[in-house]
Length: 367
Image 1 (cartoon, rainbow, N blue to C red):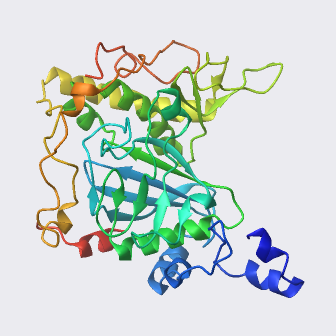
Image 2 (cartoon, rainbow, N blue to C red; image 1 turned 30 degrees about the horizontal axis):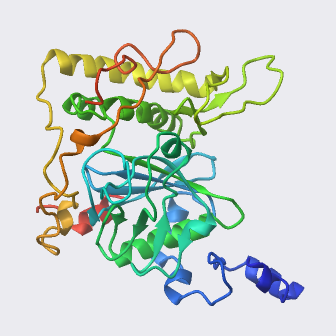
């Protein structure tokens, strides 16, 4: 709660506030708009009970540009995250690939942390959740931009735009999950990081960046636990812990050399099994010489096909230079055998370059 309000509350009011889902997510003490305090629908509350997910348990958000889908995962009573609901994305802008600088219209890709202060109940786009871009990885790689949101109004300039109805539900889930905890994680990807998709995009200049994201993706998909994310040597590091007999805790400097660490062995084993399976499929796809996708789509972002009839003309030809033409190169992703690293001979090699039949009801029925 805001300090100015807390000082005025008596004990009974404090107890009453603890039982409500409303949080003080703004910097001032102005009343929150009704849309920011709206309760979850009876249907969604019933779905939570069915899936054994406590109303205030943590959530985790996963975003996939190419598929134009946003997933909300929620922790169930076992302590693991399970899929709650998939929302078709109404609009995202830019092309596949990370955001690099202010004004490039790119929606961000990477691992982000959303705190209560990043929840915007007074957004001009109905409701908004700031992704937290730039994070420490982005800053270490000199990437810049501001106000990169998940919001309503189905209009995007570097954001992930939903309908007002969708963001109302997503915002409420996020708000309730933040009651009593500091943050939740957002994972933003160019597409689902399957072997087939990686094979299609193998010539893209962002491939090395995407295979680095795949390590964190594999940790989550193999365990259904939120990956611990650190940054060192301008690279993402996932689920790192101090080696046995380490003299002190790990300290990560986003631009400095990585400290000696090992990957949590329970997570590493499960993720390695997934990765081995993916590598075999990826290798077969390369052997079959599957066609490679164009490096630049020529379109300004995308929209899930369920919205095309409602918002014709929202996806237009891009007015910026082909994305690959100005992409700076990240350092190659290193890999070392037998040290807990999960990168490998197929996904760990160094590359020279990062070189309407479906309706909205179908999504609701598939949850």
